[in-house]
Amino acid sequence: MSLVGVMGAVFNLNHPAHTVDWSFIHLSVANVVVIGLMFVVFFLAILLPFPGAAGRAAARRGGGAS
Amino acid sequence: MSAAPTTPPRTPSKSWTVKVREKGVEALPPERLLPDGQPTYVASWIYVFGVASIASLIVIIGSGSILALKGPAWWHETGVGHFFNSIHMWSVELFFFVMVVHLWGKYWMASWRGGRGRVWVTGAITFLVAVPAALTGYVSQQNFDAQWISTQAKDAMNSVGVGSFFNLTNFGQMYSYHILLLPIAVVALVSLHVLLVRRNGVVPPFEIDSRKAALASAATSPGAGGAPPPSPPSPSQTSTGGQS
Image 1 (cartoon, chains in turn cyan, orange):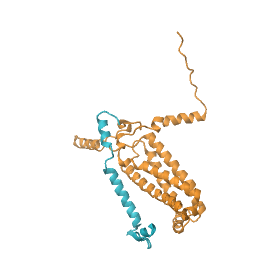
Image 2 (cartoon, each protein chain N blue to C red):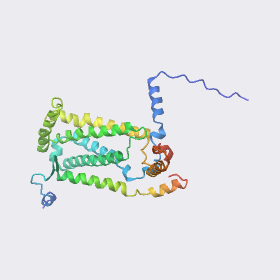
Image 3 (cartoon, rainbow over the protein chains, first blue to last red):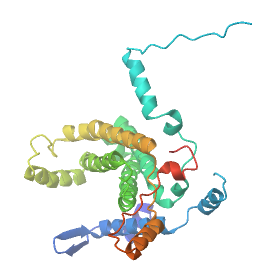
Image 4 (cartoon, chains in turn blue, green):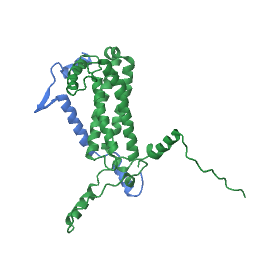
């Protein structure tokens, strides 16, 4: 079976799009997933430490520049 | 003993090229235009999404240029054409993804502070111009998807009164918008946005602790009506590099 056939078996797209409806809000599930991922990435970007950031801050406090 | 050489006093040039150059260097000195360091607070993931947007835009422009050169038959009927078509579409998805996270980050840190209003406005306009740039791309695909989107979107355009000069069902007009007019606008706005960031420096984070202390002292001092919280430091006060 070709790769396209395998993917088609996993993700059956041969139907109308699934949607989320709430009052006037009408979103496809695919778009809801993307919006959710954006929130996840946004909060991870705030919470996760940046590599080397602590060392640079310590060097600055100690009078050094990085 | 020889006399020191004297240089004649410089007369102001009337050449417009000299005036433009002097104004440009005054507004953006080379060390500010191309810095070799950034403020310490920039070492955070939330500051990554602006340059990620630019990286996505470069991929969009590159893949789109190849698609424009090869044409619809190539991107519909060959394997390599499908590949570049997908690269173009997914780089657009990534562009909007990281641009929205960039927008959220800058909104919540009020990045218009410290005289950076034009930086914020050019970024917001870039987002608004990028939306029709993507829409005209979706209707330029030359397939049933494009046909469906164009016939649906034309009603939206007609409802707001712009359908007479922005006709979603006119492929030639949409294609011209998509590969020439709107990309030029997006690239120009992004360039202006980056130059303004270079000129004004990256917005610093809120000094939450100092604000808390100021508010606490204002609340405990007798007869105080509440002193305004101190402004965050300018980038030059916290910079460790040549950014600001």
